[in-house]
Image 1: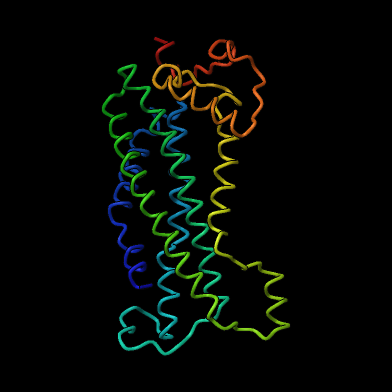
Image 2: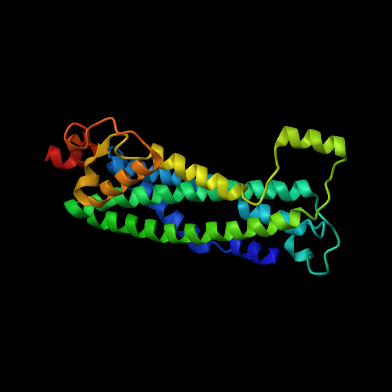
Amino acid sequence: MLKTYVDLFQDRKSFWIEVAVLDRLHYKNLNQQRPFHRFKRSMELRRLLKRLKVLQIDKELERLYISFWDAKSLDKCTSKWNYIPSKESIQYTLHRLIGAALLLDKIKIALIETYRANSTLLKLEHFVSLAIVYMGICSRLYKLCHIWVNQIEECYHMLYTWSACFPSGFKNKEQKAFTAEHNLECDADTLKSARTQYAQNALKTKSSIQHKVHLETYLANQSVVDKVKSIQKEYGISNASDSEDIGEEMMDFEDLGEVIER
């Protein structure tokens, strides 16, 4: 069963191809697009994708799998397993899975914002081909992220049920000291709680009405304003400005600098 998730996590060729195309677009358009807000969105997206790549969650899952054979590579894991990894080893993997899931949640938000920012170009009919490519990449990556995070959640719950049966690698006193220092304790809802807490914080900090509202929101995505207002009401976010004044004093014209200059 664990081998299935090892193979799934390693089979991410389509995901990293999209990331490679995104990197190519970034370097090709760096000088021309750097001043604009939409390009900063894609820069944030690339930064998060790099963090996900550095995390190497596929390698971590592979490490746990081969530890059942005390082997150095997957090729050696052919016979019946004859070792039992420690409970702390599985808990460490669980925390890495939580970190990967949170990163993917952040990436999904960055993908939506990058998609929305580039949709403005279609409305204005500027850099249309570039906008279409960015929007296509964001759409495909969002779907792949959604699939991946669901697989991580399934893998987490499977490993958690296993961890209850695995022995600790420390004696009682050493185990208490280790747990107090490293805080690797996980329960069945730790992943869900961490993702829920991040989602709530993200909704509060990313609210377009709480901060400056970009003109792109009103030109290309009028419906998103009502959604933001409903989120504000749900989580009790106070609105410092009058809703009637939105779009007048709080607009940010940096995205349309090229249009204004012309």
